[in-house]
Amino acid sequence: MGSTRATMVTMGLTPNYVPNMGVWEVAREIAANCKDADSNYQRFQNPDDPDFLDFRTSTAPRVAEVILLGCGSSHDDDDKIGQFGEGFKLAALICTRTRASKMTVLLPEHTIEFCFKDIFGETVLHAKVYNMDPAKWQYGGNTKFVCQVRMKGIRDIMDDRIIDNGATSHCWARPSNTPTTIFCKGIFICEVANVDSLYNYNLNSLTLNRDRTVATGESLPYGVAGLLLYHMTEDIADELMAAPQCWEVLTCLKSYGTPYNSKPKEMLAVAFRKRYGNDAVTAVTKPTTNLLAAARGFDVIHLPEPLAALVCDAPLTPTDLMAARVRTASTCLPKDTGFTSIASPNALYHAELAELAAIMDITQVTAEVCIFNDESKKIDGMCMVNADGCRIWLQEKLFAPGQRLERLRTMFHELAHHRADDDATPDFEFTLDLLGGKLACHILDQRAAQALVS
Image (cartoon, rainbow, N blue to C red; front, side, top):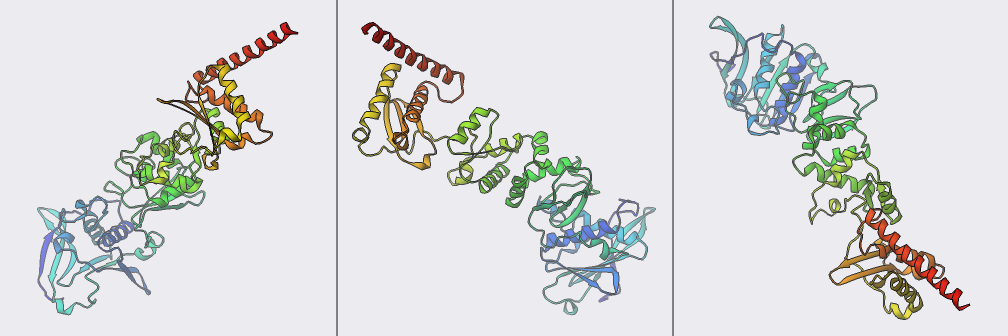
């Protein structure tokens, strides 16, 4: 020691505080604090001593942060899970009260050891702070903080419980018949049994109660479900879209409702487009609408209803072209934009257009017929009604030899849209019936007239 005299500081914790915590909580709290202080923190071990670990960071806390409750900086940032806050003091308490265990903090100008001392008739944890000569700092310029822990089994218990590259939230497949494992910023938190989850999770933030067993006062299956949306990342969105039956999304939507922010919606919309392509739409409850979308060239994707609602509710922004194409089958069809007529349609298809004009005369619907040739539209026909009147667009392939029936059928269908926007609605069906009745009356009247002449 650089000095034999130490400043004694009470830490206000008695030995019977958090009685169920042990060696794992010591390792977790120290690792969490070090990781918050330095994402590239290091751990060293003695090959001959399984009960020793040495934690080192490149940044140094103030002495007050290490020993005084309320002086940690994690309360200033919701994304931090430690940084020499209460958890670090608890680690010192647990290690000091455990037989044959010891925790020592080394800083360039101070060394801190921990012990129990009576105060007001109670045994209380104290920090012994020794002043040190910075010139004698033996760990080099890149290390500013060292925490040495000797505690039975600490090295073994940390195996597979720390994800060194866990700074980014992600999820990964969970082996069958195993509990769901929850990490926070690469630090193991707990396991959740009896949950129908497909994944283990590493989250960037997680609000926990003092014993680190439940989230925000709720059970972890419920709490993690919500946190998955509020802390969504592209990796998590991609994983959940790959297996949308996963319980987390459905449970969250049923319990929390629609998230208040747009981030998870946008990421799930992008994941949907990435997985299924630009011509995909989510299915709706009406089968005829889904069939219509499929007939017009769209890939209809059946997602669980809560997930489909979240994807389709994604905010639309001009810069987010991926999310902007996410629609339900009933709203995915192109509107009155982007159609261009072919050159000289009347000269090319005079006879065919005359037949279509005859249909409009019979049904008493006035519309301008235009012909386009653009395969990207994914449709054969479109009826557009605006202040200038009614315009019907027909794909040029309908005018090819042998396509007369398909051409007339499409024309008749589009004529029905002059008063009904959506297919398979009562208004549309009534209009189709009305037009069909007019055509039937015209045919019967012609036959009656021909019979009189003959």
